[in-house]
Length: 209
Image (tube, rainbow, N blue to C red; front, top):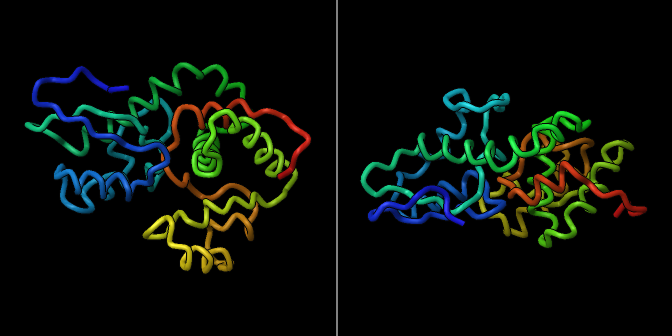
């Protein structure tokens, strides 16, 4: 689906579900929209953006809605683009599910973080609500989450196996959910609507794994 009414000189740009800020930045650079680091720098300053909920203090990771956007070749502005992504999170998830979010025992930031883990941990949408149930159950019973995707978050290359195995053994890595309890400190990417809905509406099961 496309976001925005395309004008004759607009070009589509796809933010892939689960991408981190660094991947969005790299893709914008590759397509010639920005200079390297321009998007990442702005995404590290949430105070410059508006939302009907509190944005995190130091990163917009998780709040940059994945979608295909039509971008203007004449007057593309990185800041405006980031605001559009936040606005789409608001209109596609926050507003439609505002009542359920308010009733949930999870905070909105917790739902965003869980959604980002589900996006990376479970490729099949239909399985995500059950995986969400398992992960929330681990949280509620003081089990370590053990989601390996969190240890990949700070890697330059997501699939760098050698660096990943090193992270798995690093007790100082705050994203290591094998060795540390609770949710990681931030989202580990930008989740789709289906992952966010699964985080909000987990399915109970007898499983712990």
